[in-house]
Image 1: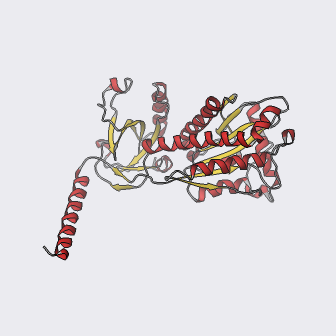
Image 2: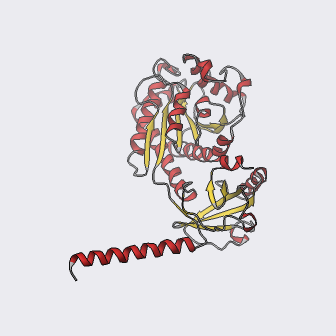
Image 3: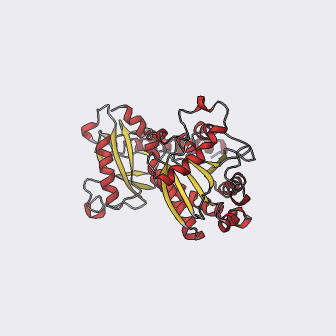
Length: 373
């Protein structure tokens, strides 16, 4: 057969197979999702420029935070599926609202803000924070101290409906921030655990408080207090090249671990093929309301959806997405009900479970779903 005819024959054959496969996928009762290929991580080095941060024992927080952020980014950029963006790469002043805007405008997947702590006592240790409206007096003082940078900004009263010195300014989370809270806590837990267990840092735990830089973001976000510059021993470690490299390596590895978990526990919101799916109940097939479910597990193995496989949970639903099986629990158009179910699921031991939303068979964000209630 002449080479031209052979190429035409192969093209027709491959095109036929492509169409056949497409029809097969459309005829199945599964979703096929477009997997997310790149995760954008924003690294925020606290303070900078005319804002030195805390100056415990003569060390400068702004320099330490920047050095660590750059080292974390250097490690992350070696990952094919991670893109790194910095809020600052030099010693410049960046307003808190701009730091969040940088992350929001590029639709970042994660936001990590890096700081060093201070105290009038000889306190020491590492703590990781997520956004929350609650906090004890000590945590409030930390957030007020970090938020005071607002007062250095020109026309700050026009940019924030917030007084950094007022406990009354602690405002509840927005719906979108609440949606991101579970992922923020998961990321914070991995970072905190690595810094404590692998670097032997004193554990000041994962906490919630009202940091303005976290309030400005609309994606899972954490703020890390690397340690206390006011503690001489810890300050020397944080200011040393070896200390900064060790901390950066552990933070970077924690982020990579979290991203790898995201790969198997979440999918992109865009659907390549939308077809009849078991994640949408037949009783709501024609409903305009969104349906909330809880994703409790993800695995390459197909597991029988029997209660004994899921710690007694009944009516677990299984959906195949790519090479993985996703397991969902619950089915309700009431957000308060699904939040109650999430608490029950977590008490069962599924601590990384989270709420997912679907409308007309398509995965949507929880924020979008709440608008349809």
